[in-house]
Length: 157
Image (cartoon, rainbow, N blue to C red; front, side, top):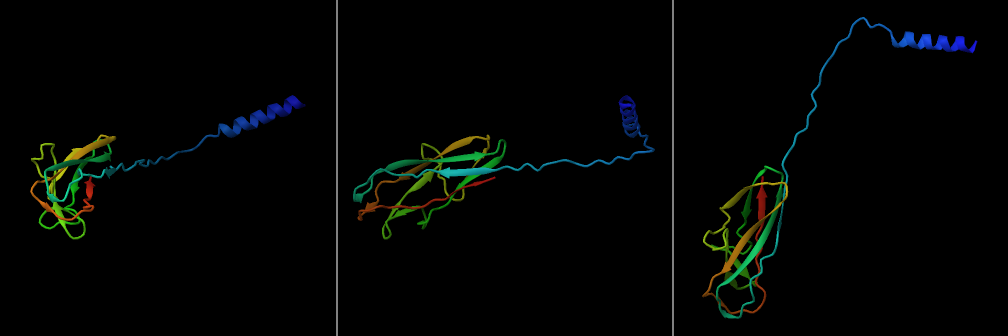
C-alpha cells in the first residue's frame, strides 16, 4: 500500500511539472548604471622662514596640493587671489602688509594667479602638485607679529 501511494505521488508530481503551455511571450529590459567622476583636494600650509623687521630679503616657500580624481577624469586646479588681495597677493598682520607671489614652477618664472589654472588627468590615486611661493626683497616691514593670508585651492572636474 505504501508503495502504491508513493507511486501515485510521483505520478501526480510528474503530471504537474510536465504541464504543456499553449504559448509564451517575452519582453526585455535595460540594466545600467551612470558612472561619474569624483575628485578631492587637500592643501598643506605654506610657511615662509622667519623674518626680522626692516627691509625684507627674498624668502621662498612651498605648499603641496594633493588631488585624488577618478581614473581618466580631466581636472583643473585654480588658486584664489587670497583674502588680503589688493592689486596683488598680500600677507597681513591686520594693519600692515607684505607682498608675496605664487608660482607654478620651481624656478618661479610662471606666476600662478587666479586667472590661471593647471590641467591634469586623474589616475584614481593621490597626485601631488607643488605651489611655489616667494616674498620678494626690498619691502619695509615695521611691525613684528604674524602675517597671514588665506588662498583657496579649487579642483574642477
